[in-house]
Length: 213
Image (cartoon, rainbow, N blue to C red; front, side, top):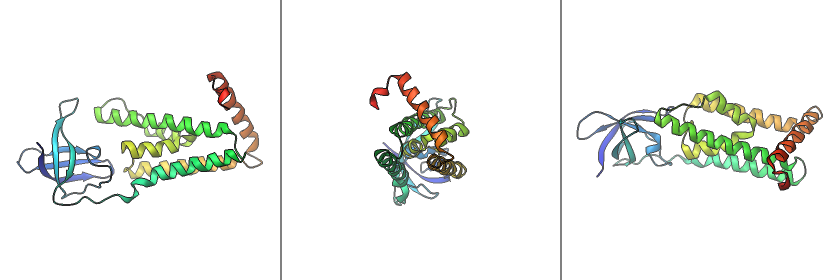
């Protein structure tokens, strides 16, 4: 059986707020992950929800859905995975055309997977009050070829996607990474590119994955 109430506080940048129950009582904490992925909670929304407790015994709302007022749809929810997918497809085409070696695509896929896992861990830690991954480390993973995975993670885990200060820095890392990728094709960048690709081949050989290439 679900309870009903009204969202009386919401912090978009941090992705949480509070619901005031219709049956009186204390305001109930609610995190953005308790809503459907295509919703944008706002103060004044009437909602149904289920009361649960986290690992520390604190009350929180889960399975939140609209009641009486339709929560607006976030039409940009597809943008992050679309950008990441488009980039990886373009990179794959450039590899096919021998503009970049196959190791470059492998680097982005491996870094993206690592970044996705780290984002998931950080989201899990945030909900349980455990050790967090610093934002600077998330940005470093992004700039070192992991940003496509970060985009998927931000969408899937709904983590760091609404914090404006983080997003500004994140997109700067994306631009820097793309600039470096382009620089590798220039006359000044080619010597470093040769070193980088040789290093990647050595890593693959060490991991026993060189037969894939």
